[in-house]
Amino acid sequence: MLIASYNPKNTGDTLVVILNQDAENQETEIHDDVVRIYDPKSHQALGYNFLQASRILPEIADQNGQVRLTANQVEKLNQYLTAHDFPNELELDKEARFVVGYVKAMTDHPRSDHLKITQTEIDHNQELQIVSGSPNMRAGIKVVVAKVGAMMPNGLIIWPGELRGVQSDGMICSGRELKIPNAPQVPGALILPDDYQAVGEPFDFKKAQHLFS
Image (tube, rainbow, N blue to C red; front, side):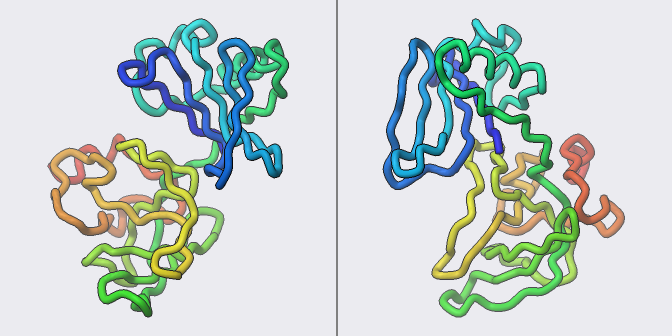
C-alpha cells in the first residue's frame, strides 16, 4: 500500500507518504529533509515525510490533496531515500481502492438498532464484511466500496476496524462522501443502477459526475 498526499497550504512543501496504519507507539528518524515514521516494536515503516518534495518532484507543486504517484515518481523517491541512507522501500500501488460492490447479504447488528452487517462482493470474487449505518442498506444492490487503503475525498483513510465489536473491512460510500455533484446531502449509500458497471470494476468517478444531473 502507498498513499501520498500534498497540501502546501497547510503543511508546506511536504509530501506525506503512508505505507501502513498507525501503530500504538511510533518513532521518527530524520535524515536531512526526510522523515521516516516507524513502529519501534517491529521496525516496520509506517510512512515518510519528504519535507522539500517539489525539489524531488517539481511537477507536484501545483497539486493539492491525494497524489497518485507514477512508477517514475516512486523510483525518484526511492533514489532520494537511498541517497539519504534510508531503504528504498516504496512500491507502486496499482490496486483500485474504490470499486463497484454487490451487497449479497445483510443482517442486523447485535449491538445496534441502526447498524447493519453486510457481506459485500468486490473485485477478484472477494467478499468483505462491512458494517454500515446507511438507512437504505439492503441486500441485492450495487454500491461503491472504499477498500482498506482508500483515501476519501475529505482525506479520511479507510482502515480495518470494529464497529461495536463487529469487524468491518472497508466502507460502503454515499454520493455525498464521494463528492459527486448534486448528490443528496443526507445519509444513505449510493445505490448504482444495475447496468452502471460490473461488480469488481474500479468505480468510474468521471462517469459518476452525471449520476445526479
